[in-house]
Length: 421
Length: 137
Image (cartoon, rainbow over the protein chains, first blue to last red):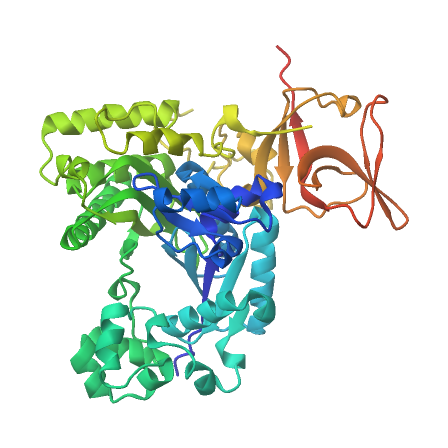
């Protein structure tokens, strides 16, 4: 009989803000927000900032005065730092499981099938990540990914009470608890879906769990049905079928072990192509790409895991452009003589195409535009972002201001290390 | 005697007949590679950070202004370790010492004072200094 699966979803709390706190202990317990480069919206907020009422995605120009008044610390995105800290967190997590599935820059699923004392183990994971990297995490444990996501959300919502860990197998009256949770909180159920469900009086997670399967399939297609089955402890989802619009993932294990960079490049190129299509379908562009590769932990062969985040000055949805950047990221982390099992990419910092500047970089970029982009990116990467920017750009002031609020590359530039007395 | 082509991986050495019988053959191929500083200096990459020393408060421990310190967060700090500590929100690099139930942070320079950690102090250990890299020229 197949062993019952156990998944743990580990998710960093206010990840970008937490990264800033590691190198600046004065920020502990303070309200902090981190802004996205292009739009200047809040993309990460500490609990203290949330308590002040700052919403996710709030445009900075709208909340600037409020932030000044309430002494909210504001940072521009420091992707070099966040990418490095993410690597550290994932590396630390990989010590705890034979199978780690990275979901985004700050989330990963761990397979804990067959492990004993799950809650205790999860507390150990949380404690080790905190000690090694300084990043606080929340952990949800369950027999399926949807349930792990749900318990993770419960852990995050009541950090003090749960100690940051919620284990489905130890919850009494789970059904009672989910009567209080709106259906929109389920992974994969967005606002539109919850509106459809509301018309049939399906409002809570409990309602959704108990609803007729045919109705669910009719309203939300086979994907919705699979989500419902996962709620009922039946494993049937692959990661790709649940698409978080904020990040697009594409990854696949290799059928046979792969050694050569060229083969991995092929795989990464096809992931990028698929993901870029979805991006364009959504009428969006992305500004950051994460690439990761790793060996098979089940095998008794040398182990290697690494990831790299590359961020682009202006967003793009151009497949060849994204492949180029993904290859750059990949080349930096590829090592010879390892038996690779999996490669994957995550598209991040996704925004809708809106302003005229963005139209300038449409999917059908001219070669000249490509070259210009390349030079700009290179200069900005070497000299610091914001060094070169477009004149007559409505966001001019925003660029200047934002780069001044970026913290140092504490873990990736010799010239920017922490200085200690 | 055969020569090994440069781009081929060295083969597991075969022993000549001069080796006495009963000698166990090596389990692994013996390959010389470049010495890797990373391997030597960093035990736990996920928990290892670099910081730069300022001032001369730890000069007698061999830590000079501008030196790079390798800080390992995975090590449990003990009395006698040089630690990167946080005191009232500020980073400080000092030698940790426990005297009974008391915790002290000691400089390595007579011009600086030792500090006792009170219960009211906002104190924590960020990591343990494992190596100091001092440039000579």
